[in-house]
Length: 119
Ligand SMILES: [Zn+2]
View 1 (tube, protein in one colour):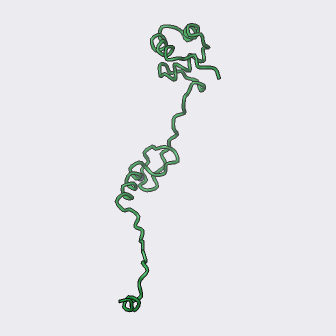
View 2: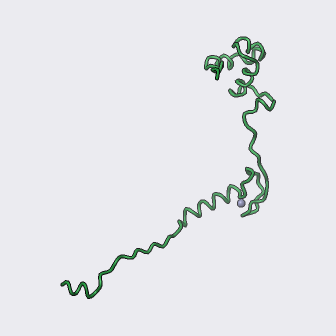
View 3: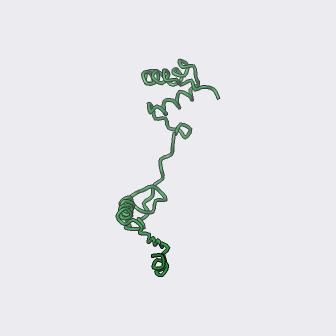
């Protein structure tokens, strides 16, 4: 794969000059294609370019489905069934009530008469 033409030097160049020249002019200056300039500008948060191919990531989907614990309908990430408050409450509850595991250790016992006979 070819090395990216957007070196740190080019990045600083873009930061200083992206408002002064057109993207086409910038591309000519750098010696790369227009698309590369646009992608770099989006990546460096210098410019917002609308268009699916320049989007870095889609906004996370949210829903306002009632929380299964308290019924709160505040928006939260999709597929999260409980609100943040309930999540925290449950996490804290877990912390205060660590699962109690009954551990019974049975040690072998010496027979009473065995001990007596030895003495
Ligand atoms: Zn809740």
